[in-house]
Image 1 (cartoon, one colour):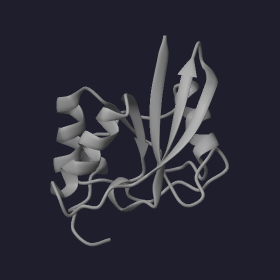
Image 2: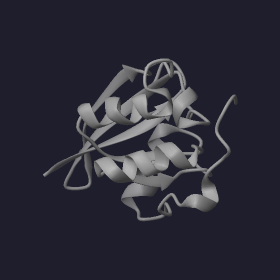
Image 3: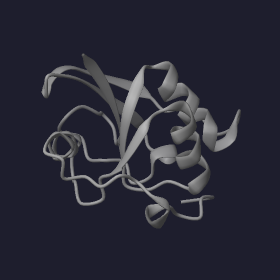
Length: 125
């Protein structure tokens, strides 16, 4: 079964791209489709503006893309709760430098589940 993992990224995206520091303020998302612990497909999509729907707009956007997991270095509590409500598992990838490293760490079971201790206050970053 295919699982889509979204990873906030800096331009141009892809497996070699640096992770975006904060999920809602990243340049774009790299979507990695995994099947049987193998990378099946890599797709890059733009981020959506915070204007309409605030910090929950990217949550809904990623859910519409079929995302089941997200690896992030930072986010506020409100979007974390939003991801939980739409059934997207969120993992803390704070030590990973690139999208590829984050995917491998996720596959290796090395990323902790994102919890309130990793959240920031939100607002301007």
